[in-house]
Amino acid sequence: MTIIDRSSRSFILSIFKRLLDLGIAICLVLIPIIIITGGFKTSILGISIKANHLYSPIKILVPLILIRMVITFEVKNMVLVLVSIFMTMLFMEIAIRIWNPPMAKPEMNQIHQASAVFGWELVPGSSGIGSLGESYHINSVGFRDAEHTLRRQPGINRIMVIGDSFTFGARVNLEDTYPKQLEGILNRANMASEVINCGVIGHNMWQHYEMLKRKVLLYQPDLVILGLFEDDLASSIPPYNESDGYQGENPFEDQGVSGVMSHFSLWNFLRNVNAQFEYKYRYRRGYAYMKAVENRKKKWGTANPTNTNYKIMSGKMEKRKYIEFSESLKQVVITANDAGTKVLVVMIPDSVQLNDSHMQAINRFVEQACREIGVPFVDVTPALEAEEDHRSLYLFPFDAHNSPKGLRLIAQTIANKIISLHFLSPSNHELSRTNKCAESSGF
Image (cartoon, rainbow, N blue to C red; front, side):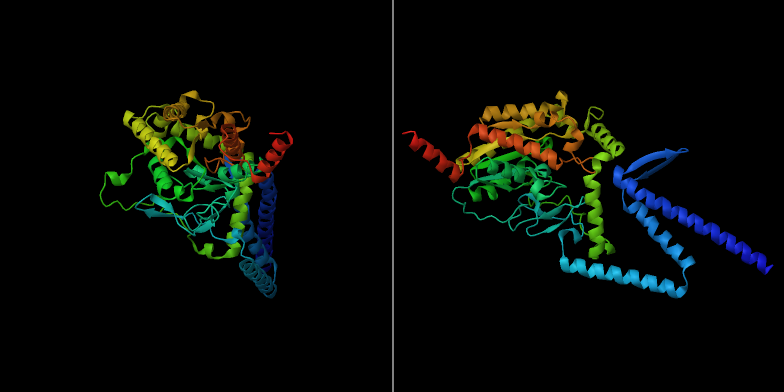
């Protein structure tokens, strides 16, 4: 009986080992498949199977390997292996802490605070890593930019960009935002310029005006760019005009660092590396991209005519909203011009507006409002529509904001407008070259 029991246990153990080996093999195969495809979704015998993250098979692979080791190694060898793994991870944790790269910081989306003046604002000096592995750093004034003195540098054009999350650069690094890409384009065009990003996620028209009055004009910019998105029409009147004792509110209050694992640099590093990997190969996840686009069209498109965003884009908001917006826009232009600063209004479209004239009614309204005020206007929608693959212009399926490529097109369109308007002075080097040419010509 004992012999039979031993034989049965040996057989069962052998089958269990084979199943473990099969599971390990499947996980090892899934990892390169995810790397190659960026994630997949398929159906086998009516069962839906999908894997979008590298850590999905890894979370299964690690315990399978540990179980396989437990039933294979002797206790002494198993302890030795586990101690070796622990010491390796401890060494990596210490090394990463000493290195302290941005990628080792925990995800921290809480970079906002309530403000009685702005409703909410960026927390000066805050920093962190976003959900796609992008890094954030807010300067001492509350701009997502480097530190800048109030005194302008001689011979350098100063441009300040006001706007919401599309200007701020949600889900992308600072150098990929359109203000910073605009700075590079202008400098390469011999128009020495510094472009300061004053965008704040979620800000609307009344907050853009407050930002201009209370912060931006202190820097005496040559040009202020007002980057508008369709929902800026929703709120043009400050809430404290209608509510005494207004203290502001932070709509992002529940966002921030959480979880025990966020305190380990090794974990943060691996999480952020995976986030950047998924971001880089997001275009390959076709099924998820199409689902994200369809869902946004259903939410904001003609399929949901009661949605506020749909009403704004299609020009179906109540009349007072248009009047309030026009008055607020006029105040922005007058205030800036009185301070000796030019203004350029830029319209940035949502993805659902591309190639849909019906959804671009708000663009035409803003253009007309600018024409009546006499302020230059540029709609970047045609530049984005001209791109064959719209998937490359946005961060779908993770986010509806523009990708670095889409932001580059926005920056180039703005640069073309600035150059055509002769808003900026050429660099000192270019002026010197121009003067020499004039002197040699006898003028």
